[in-house]
Image (cartoon, rainbow, N blue to C red; front, top):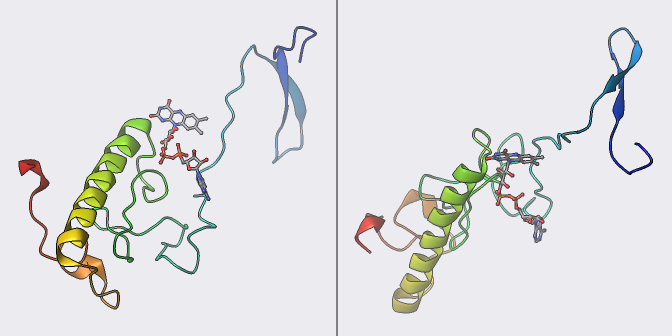
Length: 130
Ligand SMILES: Cc1cc2nc3c(=O)[nH]c(=O)nc-3n(C[C@H](O)[C@H](O)[C@H](O)COP(=O)(O)OP(=O)(O)OC[C@H]3O[C@@H](n4cnc5c(N)ncnc54)[C@H](O)[C@@H]3O)c2cc1C
């Protein structure tokens, strides 16, 4: 770090040989990793082997009324555009769930909502007609 607070170089270390060096640069991109921040979900939701929420293609989790999109459930794309799209789908499903809840009441919590209709109440209808 220079006197002006800007990056000037980074120190590198070859983890195989142990060789250390310096690489001059004026920018650093921090890689934060791919592990999902899932502490809140453990023990309540079905997670895959890497800790992502398991959802179906209608963004449903194993708990009725809980839908998910974005990096918490996506282990493949992990991009802003895909996360926004998945989040939009999950939001539409949430709206639909609340409407169904209001008109039909709470679904049976003993049944996995991914086994039958949207939000665990009736068979999935295309959402495009809204
Ligand atoms: C350094 C970096 C560079 C990237 N560059 C690109 C790029 O160039 N192009 C691209 O398309 N994508 C890029 N990505 C990926 C992109 O940022 C993510 O795909 C996207 O932000 C995921 O959106 P999300 O809503 O799923 O998760 P996030 O954006 O991570 O949002 C999750 C939110 O949940 C909050 N949260 C977590 N736990 C709790 C809790 N217990 N209670 C309440 N809130 C909680 C977090 O604070 C956060 O605000 C980059 C990511 C990083 C880290």
